[in-house]
Amino acid sequence: MSEETKPKWANPEPPIHHAIALWAARCAERALPIFEEQRPGDDRPRAAIVALHAWERGELPMTAWRAAAFAAHAAARDATEAGATAAVAAARAAGQACAVAHMFDHAPHAASYAAKAVGLHGGGKAGQEVERTWQWENLAPELRSIGFPNGL
Image: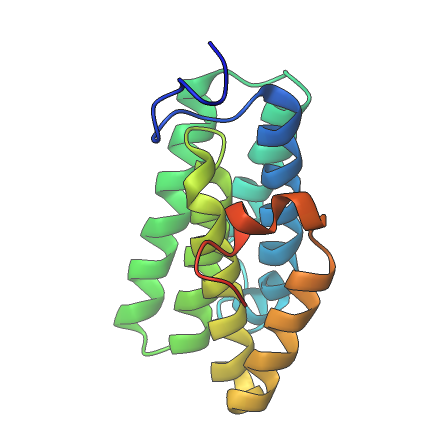
């Protein structure tokens, strides 16, 4: 099936899918220390990123990375209850990044949540914008329409 006839919701070819997944992981990894500072001892978001890397290498079945993504979102819900808003965003970034293994269009959400975590962690709007610029500059130009579907 060519790119022109592929349904809009279908994942891109594997090399592109993997490249966007690795970028989403890098975005989320930059926010992980925020989560770990605010929620020490909860390794679910980090485990989601580890699971995504294992998927990318072909070492993890769907059921395992799917469970890891859900666990990262559960960590976000737990952080919500504790009032740790930056940690919530960082955990969501990890969960969304891990979910890229399922559908590539989770990647922009991973990046947005990671930037939000930076802003909420004391960087403010300026810190969030710096993070978004880093994300843009660290995504291959040919993939920017995937990572930033609405532009920078």
